[in-house]
Length: 319
Image 1 (cartoon, rainbow, N blue to C red):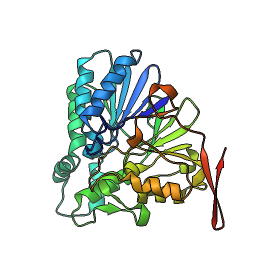
Image 2 (image 1 turned 135 degrees about the vertical axis):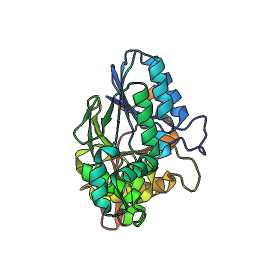
Image 3 (image 1 turned 120 degrees about the horizontal axis):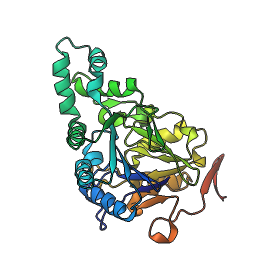
Image 4 (image 1 turned 180 degrees about the horizontal axis):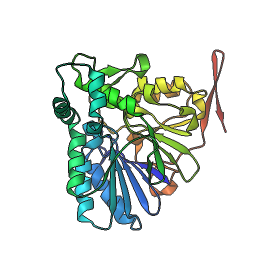
């Protein structure tokens, strides 16, 4: 398979376009998040060129609008083009209402009130599921081990995303999970994680805005998406979890604009430069293709620049 991470449009770095990452081969396409209508339009244009693709899998990593805002428009388009077999994958919180209720431990709660709260809290996911059902597209639970077009969901485990749901609903608890570099909001923490092997044999991990506390077996991957649009604190937590952080390739999907609540990958870019990491590939510099497409307008990935730290001295080595 190949990976394409969509970029911001027309040089607009202020609009929060959010994430949209495509994994594809000759017959199938996986759309991992679609955070803006412009992304959905780009997917439609992509499919008009890749006419052999007929199987489409839409993965919604979590509820935030910069990961979901283009999904329903995309589903509507698929419904109008009957050549596509479409499947949708996301967390289905209502299936775990009893588990979530037991974790809240609030006598004022009952199953029906909790269902209403879950639908209100995870409203974007609820609307996407309703839209898929309206078009008779099957919706599957995004559980670890689920195969999606040759890729595999690897996290989070059920206990993790039900923990997140319980904390999101329970107003008595903090709206964050984890500590230090790994701290993340509950809405982001349990993003669906997807593993895929690319045509160049790289094993890539997509993790949305997941908390690093919820990411496991990171040493198994050649390419890691740094979560939350390149937020430096999350990236540092991932580097600390790796046996050799310098022997990995990283990419950032930072299409979140220049506002104060944006991803802010500029800090990460500078940190990785100062620490002698190979620069993370970043959608702020254009649409990202792995493996690179060279002269077709996408980023050309240079030879890998590796950092080796010896005492107080840093050396940069090409290999």
